[in-house]
Image 1: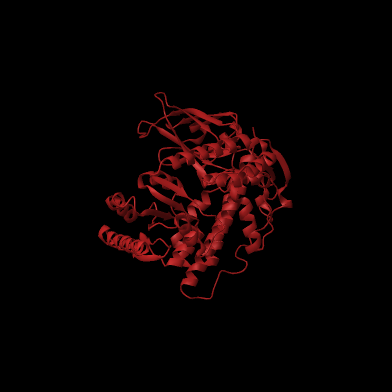
Image 2 (image 1 turned 120 degrees about the vertical axis):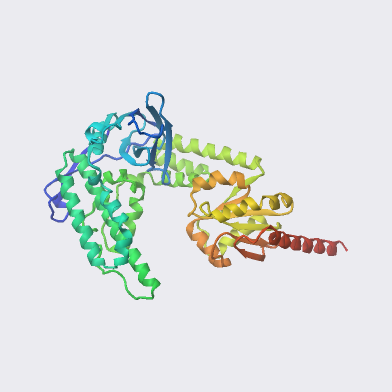
Length: 486
């Protein structure tokens, strides 16, 4: 269960407002554990319900971003999830197209949910039991337009109109007014103070995100037109008052594992004075370790020892995932059809190209620049299968993509694509494309045995053009070898 800590009166922390006489009731630090949290329950479906699957999106505090889990409803409408995330975790519950429920689950404990789809009344629709039942019931009986992300979602739907208007003062005035109205309505809502606090603090965080996003968009628009202009210096004034990022409650928002990074950026660029929950320092080693594993990079014994020392509660979880990755990599080595390769995240500039090429010294390469969302890229791959089969013993096919591609989708596709695969950071992808002048995808390089680019194609040139260049290089190599033998 969440341990509640009653903090100082709000007037000591915030600018004067209708909220200033209310106390802040923060939430406890998340529990750390290698045990699974269980979410189980039953869905009473409406007659026109069209799916027998429910899903949860887990906002992973310890890991990289989050992940989705699915469960089939049985004949009685029951479902069950075992969620292994390493900590007390917020999840979104979905049945059908819409995200409906927002709740907390606890490692080693069970949260139960009864969802009655035959009514829209939130009091009758949602019923929680077990771990965090009081908070979950309060949160999900709160009207959707009073939740922490409601204003953000509403403004984003009108984003194009706001940015085309290019009136920072009108945008700011409108959002401030709507934010104040949301705060007033949250204060008057018939839910406990813990739920009010969570939604109020969350709305403040998303308010700051809106102002930051709007300023960035406008500044980019001005820059593109060659205008020496940016939003006014005090644009963030209302959003950066107080030290609201420090509360544990914000750890349970979708941006929970980014609060430390967010506070640093705001302090450096916007003159704020934010701190962040101490919990994020406590899990720093484990978080970095999970990022390594998410990027398919094994942890060494020194890194594992540091995690055991800092967060022993997570040692079993991290070690188990490390071993699973080790075995998966062994399997990949046993399977010569495809292989995932890496370069260090710190490599940048033209060194990105050299870091990739040096892994294939002495081989003739065809390098394919692509993305999972690029249908021409994937159609070209299908067309190139006969070419790859014909030259599989003479040419190494290398595939490079970046973070605009979903990593999960990328991992699902590459076994069928085969070849040698790199997944670069955004910075590395941009540096590489700039260095070799790749302006669009798909793009292809033919690289000889000395790492020199002999031919570059923008767009799929067809198998004949690729084959012609490959044969030219093979003949050149053959002539060189004959010359040496003579």
